[in-house]
Image (cartoon, rainbow, N blue to C red):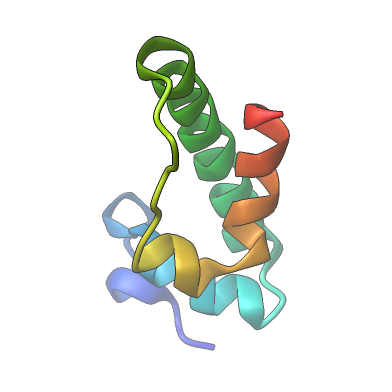
Length: 77
């Protein structure tokens, strides 16, 4: 797999990371795991503050699948 974002690590986004994680790139999976943890902490704060009936995630979170959703669930639990 070619390097995403023209080989500039600082320019990579989640959209660059999930294909890499699906190809088995450990750095991409680690980046998504970290992002998922921070997203989960933010979602947990929203839940505690606003007590919503549901939280909807879209696009990147859904495409990244378990690479992102697993750490979100762990942080929210």
